[in-house]
Each structure stands twice: as C-alpha cells, then as structure tokens.
Image (cartoon, rainbow, N blue to C red):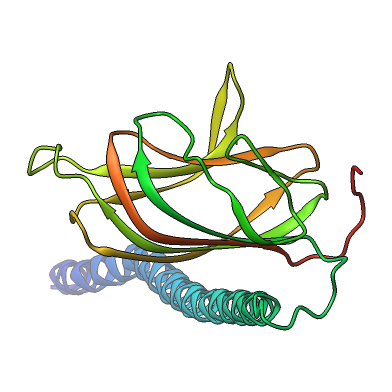
Length: 226
C-alpha cells in the first residue's frame, strides 16, 4: 500500500509539473508579443507625428507661395500704373525718358514689318523699326482692330513683336488672335537693349485699323547708346 500511495502521489504531481513548464514556455512568447505591440504603438505615433508635420509644412509652403504671388501681382500693378501714368502724352514730364506713341492703319503683309511711323516721343523709328537706345524694362501697350478674312475658320493669326532686320528676325512676344475683327487691347512688359530694332508683324496677311502702339521705359536709365 505504501508503494501504491507513492505512485498515486507521483501521478498527481506530473500534470501540475507539466502545467508549470508550459506556463514558463509561454512567458517569453507573451513578452515578445507585448514588446512588438509596444513598438507598433510607438511607430504609429511617430507616423502620425510625421504626417502632422507634413501637413503643417504644406500649409506653410502654400502661405509662402500665396504671399510671393501677391507681392509679384502688387509689383506688376505698380509698374503698370507707373507706365500708364508715364504714357500721358499730352503733358510729358521728362523728355529724357525714352518713349514713343504710334498710330497705324493699313495692311500687314505676312512676315513683313508694319510700316510704322512715330506720332510723338523721343524714340526714333527707321524703316518701320523702333530704334531702342537704352537698356531697360519697357511697358508695351497695343490697342486696335486686326482683320484677317483670308484665314480659314479654325485658323488663327499671330501678332508678333520682336527684333527684325534685313536678314533675321527674333520674336520677343506674340499674341494669338482667333476672332476676326475683334478689338485688341493688350499690355505687357519687355526687357530691351540698346541698339535693338523692334518691329511689329503678323504671320499672315491682315488689315490693321486704328492701331495705337505705345512704348515707354520704366526702369532707371543705366546705359544708353547715343
């Protein structure tokens, strides 16, 4: 009986020993999972913080761009205002500032400079070309009507302002016109250099009516070729 009781006690203790061994084996796995969960939480927090910083940076960049655009628009408006004020031709304030005012009515032959002639101003015109004598930023104003009935319905006309001589031509600015006979009213700015010969022409035959062409130097005079 004593041996049997010992066997029973041993049998009762064996399952308890296995249970403890299994729990000890499970502890490392639980600790690993707990550590992985903690790392996942930290990674998600870091990702959320990074995305929040990116959104804030995007807003800051947008504000900077909007501020820069507003400053450029304000500068452009000021330059146009100054240029239009300088184009009050009835009472020119300073004869030393290069400017010219041209009116033209006539034909425009494809690729050929219009035969412009100055109405008033200190900039001279020779063979239809405006003779630029000073480096600087110029305000250009064009107003008038251009008709091109010879073109097909879906074609367009290009009005080109650029450098032109007997052998070569270089477009500095061009405007595409699609509506035949529509009134033209454009203002732009170009940086021109002394000794440039500036002309106006079209890429196809056209009829020009009452074209007013104004050109005035906006920037301070640094260099002039006299």
